[in-house]
Image (cartoon, rainbow, N blue to C red; front, side, top):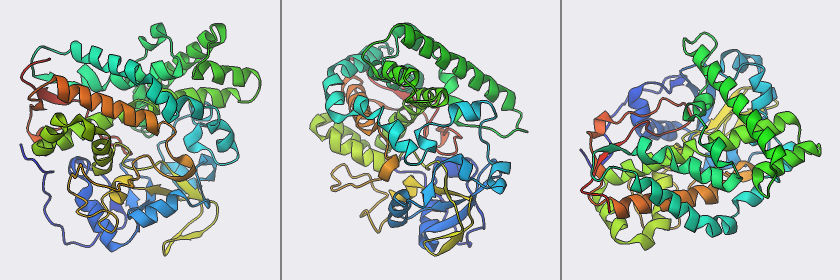
Amino acid sequence: MTNQEPLAAVDTQPLADPVPLTGCPYKANPYPLYERMREAGPVHRVLFPSGVQAWLVTGYDAAHAALNDDRLGKNHDRGNDRWRARASIMPEPQHSQLQVHLLHQDPPTHTHMRSFVTDAFTPRRIEQLRPRLQEVADALVDALPEAGPTDLVTGFAAHFPFRVLAEVIGLPGELAARFDRDWGKAVQPVGPTDPGRPLYEARLQGLQSYIAEVVTHKREHADDDLLSRLVVARDQRELSQEELDSMIFQLLVAGQEPVTNQITTALIALFRHPDQLARLRDDPALMPRAVEELLRHDSAFELTTWRFFDQDSDLHGTGIPAGDSVIVSLCAANRDPRRFADPDALDLDRSPNPHLAFGHGIHFCPGAALARAELQIALGALLRRLPGLHLAIGDEDIEWTPAVLGRGTSRLPVGYDRRL
């Protein structure tokens, strides 16, 4: 095992047009490609595995500007026929019923919908919940084997964010226990001709039925929690049924899977830098700043979701046709040497650290304070209670998830001396 990211051969060939964002080497380490793209310019046409083409923004300044560019809208209705023909978006009726959440809305609808969720995720409330979140983390560590090896995804990372989320939004224990993590793959759509399409549609239908059950339960057992408030807003016609279902869909899926992935990317970064891992284990006060650097170094939100111009427009010197998709690479922006000194290094003392791991502008992640607390608590519990924690496979054997927009691993075999 190396303490650095796997080195890629230096590629001196001109970038393809479009640049293919495909293959295991790219998913294992996209940063050499992002470096070449940044050096060549801030905007490039790219090709995704589904066959859809998009425009990718790679530099920090360009990404920051694009995330705050009010010419770029998120609503799928802005997409042109060329994009729609190849984009692996949800089939109907689920697309209309589950995809009108915050990530796909523009003001004023976005502003109105976001107002219902912000109070549940304020830094002050999250701080009040920290003792309970710590109990959740410790209970999961208690259930791990006395000594390694074990898989930290199935044993910890896949469960901690969802159990935390259930506490924060008011999902009852009996319903939380029946949530199928496989439904989370609904945010990894496959095209209509893909052999996996029937399984994907089955996931959607299962998740949609589950959301309907959640709504019914909260309507019959209303409480002072986020899910109850959303159902009341629907009953008072402040939200449509589609908006309610979509917001619950976003909470259940986007509210947990990225944190699962970020726990894995953070641990892998620390395994590759054992000196930093030892320092963080020995100095817990370093954890808040360390989490910010781990978010910057390898973000679970690799790429943003689609954005569209409603008319032919210029983006940093590149002409973008109306309705073509524009995507921002948060990972590429967070490794830009024009903004971060020695950007490929993991520097737990880095300050300031204005990374874009949670986005920026009106679509800045409303759950950022919760995600930060979860990462601090999760990493702290694992490093404190599993002395000798290390990767139990070779770096080259890490299986990176094939998700288009995110980074993470579906399994993370680790060893440790004992469980304290």
